[in-house]
Structure formats: structure tokens, C-alpha cells
Length: 250
Image (cartoon, rainbow, N blue to C red; front, side):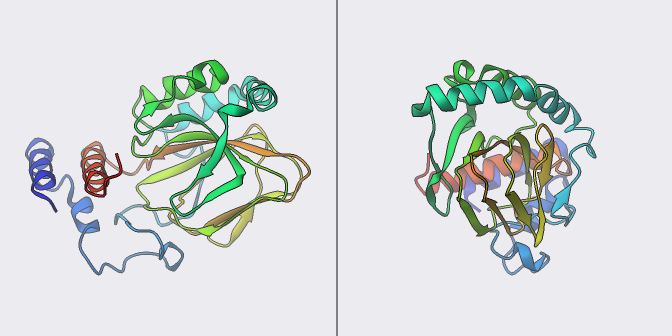
């Protein structure tokens, strides 16, 4: 750890207790082997979090308001996204995953680099409002990551991969789902139900396909894993921000 991280961690322990960020510190120890085989490609696995690939969207009280707000506003969100896709295509871009970039995977960002994307307030106002009120203002969104509309074109496939860590969790609102679409997490394949949310731990290997005849659209939100604590979240933001700065990624 750098001196800056050691200073921040010491301040968090002083404020929240000597054991408050033990799991974060354990995560950083080299040679840890307490991970599922299908998490092997993830960079960081914080111990003590449920080792389950799939979670029920309504099982966590912290997340219930986010899930309910997204699902209850689905019709307006779909209408606005459909209009944006047909009339404001320049607002979409090739999705750039940390592993790859895909032309047949289009993204429209609502939250990125720790802040709301203000232009999306005009492009997709309902989704922007719901995200701001229920995830950003409440600090349930993981500021290290993002929220975007994810549009897979017909025939597109997202290759199997693990994301970087397990201390955030991926919520999908199924916005527009044609037949022939699927998502596989830890070797279990499911489909989206339009207007409903899926929740999964993307440190497990996962992939997606659109074998349908029109684009598949979901709204993705990277939320804090509900089993993490506020001191841990503070420590994780400081840690990852410092690592990105050292790597020149600002």
C-alpha cells in the first residue's frame, strides 16, 4: 500500500473501529485462495461476501427502492430509450469494457467516472431521474463504476469473462427484450423478463447473447454489494482511486 492509502486506512480505523476495514485489508494480501473457481479471473475478491453468482433483486432492503423505482417506471424508460435510439443515435457509443471494445454492443451512459452524465437528463429523463434519486443521491451506486443502457445488436455476443471485483454487484433492468436473448452467469443460463430486474455478482464468469431479430436493451447499474459496510466502501473508493491514479487512469 502507498503512504496515502495507509494514511486513509488509519483514519477510517480511527473513526470506525480497528476491525472496520479488516476484510478490505485481507483482500490485499497476496496468495489468497478463498474464491470460487469461476471467480478465478477477477482481480480482487473481498472475503466474507456471499459466494453466490445470482441474487434475488428484492432480497436486500437497501436495494428494494432502486429495484421498485426502475420496474415501476419501465414503460416510460423504454419509450424514451426507443426514441433516443431512433433519433439520437450519436449519443450511443461502442461499449468499451476493460477487456475489449465492441461495435455491436452499444452504450448510452447515465453515470460515469464518479458523476452523472448530464446530457442523459435530456436524452432519457426518466431513467436519469430514477437513477439520481434512488441510487446516486442515496450513495447506493458504486462511484468507481457506472450505469448505462446496454444495447446488444442482433447476433452480438459478449464473450465469457469475469469483472474486476466482487464488492459491487450488477443490476439489470430489462428494457426491451426480443426472443432469443440469454445471459449465463457461473454456467447457469437465464433470460431477461421485460420490465423486471436481474441481479448478479459479476466477479463470476458471465456472458450474454442476442440471437434475436432486433436489439436487446437493458439498463445496467453498478451498485455497492449490500453486504459491504460504509467504512469498507470508503476504503475501497480510496484504494481503487489511488491505484487508477498511479496507473495514469484519471
